[in-house]
Length: 167
Image (tube, rainbow, N blue to C red; front, side):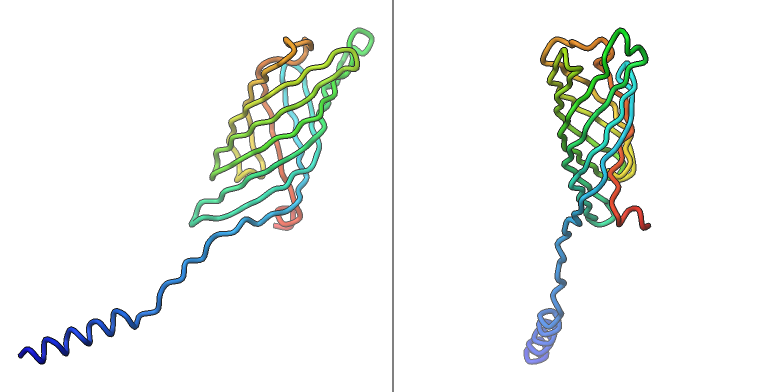
């Protein structure tokens, strides 16, 4: 009887320890240079155009993306006799999980008479960081020198690369 128990335990342990180990594959970021562009309103209309380092990764069924970008912003005027166009250079970082995105950007704005440095935290909904609708809050460091640039910003931003465009 003891011999049978020992043999059964031995066979059981052999079957448990002889199984192949499941190798976990760590997800990796798929990085690329992408077109970064968008448009929106912050009292007046604006458009932006630039480039980003766009990264996408799938963890299980959850796509995650991140993007570092730099772009030029343009806020045209409809009264060029009374006010100037406003130009800006911005840098930012976006992070998206499924359909929710968060971003933080900093920009220098000028109309070549007045200047401002603005920090804008943003929250958004979209498609994995590729196309996102954002709400942002502009925080001026120079006491809002531009009447056409408000605190609240609504925008649609795209990060498009060759892989996304070929789908």
